[in-house]
Amino acid sequence: MNIQSMKLIFLGPPGAGKGTISKMAAERLGVPQISTGDMFRTAVKEKTELGLRVQAILAAGGLVPDELTIAIIRERLSWPDVRQSYILDGFPRTIPQAEALAAFSSPDAAVDFEVRDDLILFRLTGRRVCRACGAIYHAVTKPPKVDGICDLCGGELYTRNDDREETVKARLRAYHEETEPLIGYYAGKGRLLTIDGSPDAETVYTTFISEIGRFLKK
Ligand code: AP5
Ligand code: MG
Ligand code: ZN
Image (cartoon, rainbow, N blue to C red; front, side, top):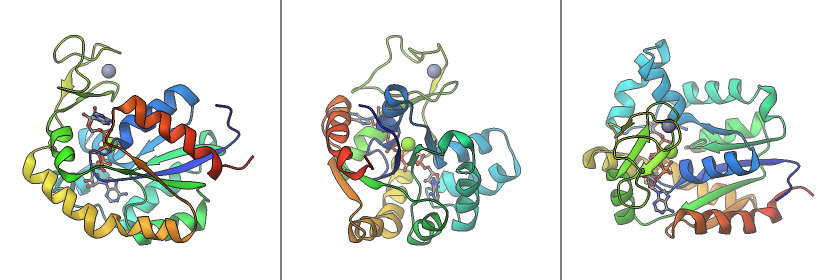
């Protein structure tokens, strides 16, 4: 696929595959993936001022305040690598975030990956992530070649501390209350692409690529 410009938002509940599909697009198309969740987790790990502020919120499965999240994305979108293309993985997540984004960038489409709640729990409790490079695995659907070790870089795989069942339920509640209204928001602008996120990742990616073209400028 030859693209000039592709500015996308990835919507969808926790475990929908936003990280998985955006990393495939980053590798195959060179589109930068920007994950607010990854940025917050890095801040927590490095114990920065931001990290200390958001640590408890992430651990409880709540949402980080809009002002903080918007400021981070506004700054990141000023870098030269995202002038033509980006995938925002996990931002915006509230209507005020979407309205703020519209004031400093114009996304071509919001892609909503639909996955049922029962499949989400299976995906998240089996997820393993590489501590070194961030590659995403699953104990059943995408196991590493060697248990506990990243295929790509040899790094150690870990379980995110918000992937425990109680925290997943809190994240799902936050999703249904705060984030789901964005589906109607982008549909109303004629910018919503809905993709079935439940088949295997390769099928989801292929469907996404075959459908997204109609939202992009020629
Ligand atoms: P974030 O890191 O964005 O978490 P999330 O939205 O809950 O989404 P996940 O990363 O859990 O799921 P995903 O859709 O990326 O799925 P993945 O590809 O990994 O946010 C974390 C926290 O940060 C939030 O709770 C909040 O506190 C804060 N935050 C972040 N952004 C914010 C914002 N804008 N405003 C306020 N707060 C914010 O896949 C999951 C698993 O399933 C993996 O194991 C994978 O291998 C497997 N899998 C994926 N796709 C498939 C498939 N098609 N078939 C089989 N298995 C699959
Ligand atoms: Mg993710
Ligand atoms: Zn790795």
